[in-house]
Amino acid sequence: MSTKQSHTFKKPFVTEGGATIPDPTIAYQTWGKLNAKRDNVILVCHALTGNTAADEWFEGIFGQNKGLDPNEHFIICPNVLGSCYGSSGPTSVNPETDKPYRADFPKVTIRDIVRLQQQLLDELDINAIELVIGGSMGGMQALEWCIMDERPQSAVLIGMGEKHRPWAIGISHTQRQAIYNDPSWNNGFYTEDNPPKKGLALARMIAMNSYRHPSDFDEKFGRRLQDGQSQYEVESYLNYQGEKLVERFDAVSYVRLTQAMDSHDIRRSRPRIEETLAGLTIPIAVIGIDSDMLYPAVECLELATKLPKARYEEISSPHGHDAFLIEFDQLNPIIKSLKSELSEQAV
Image (cartoon, rainbow, N blue to C red):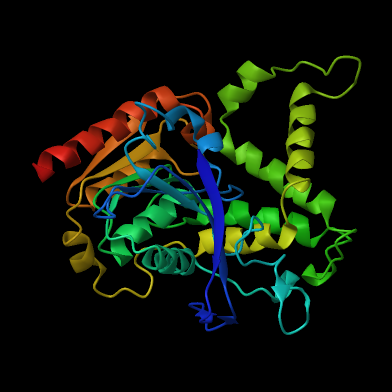
């Protein structure tokens, strides 16, 4: 049984860039119960267009005797700052105008996202986090949690590295350009009944090409034509993915969150980062995906070598970057092994 909630802070939130968000709200969902010490916590960080329903998109590792078991732990998944699923973001009402922020919502960073999550866990009086886990943008948050906070006791970081490299930034840039070039974009101040649907759909199609691997498309679609049409099956698939995202996501949120991902670099503005990493002695599993074209496995391996107690694991999959949402049979043993290691250390 899960609980969906939100919390609005009375104190304004100031971003790394110096912008102020008055009365920031964070949405979140929980499963299980906190123990007396308030430390049996698993924090789940979601990816770019994800939401708080971790039991749905992480279904294969969620449940009894799986990596994330609400019978044993208090599991919490916050919606990120800048999203459109209940936390403060471009679709929220700007108190200065009584209209949605749209493009007036400031740029945020991965660290901004984590800082608001920290405030939520402070509010909930959570003393320790047994495990923080995330894939892609979620992994970026989980890594920053380990650097910025003493509460995480272990971490699983999937399909990301220590920074957003030019390849990934370039792909994000092309997605944003697709949105900007939609006639309905209007500099980010579109109306609710006329959003830049075509641009957002195209951005999603570009993303989907980076999330998968050529061999996966070969196997799934080949050069087959859609039944009764002159369109290739892969074209139909991409059109469908674009249309599906348009129905559930906001264009400025997409822009702001891809910009947040571009900000990811654990060395940014941290002159003493080597000392910080040297002191990061919690058990960490860094998981690469052998077919990931967006965040190649070598980036994950490089990250693992820089964390004192990290171990590198690799998922074998034809599905590319999206494997972190598919290959649950490979993820479960890694998560459970890390939790067992932590339990042994506590004895």
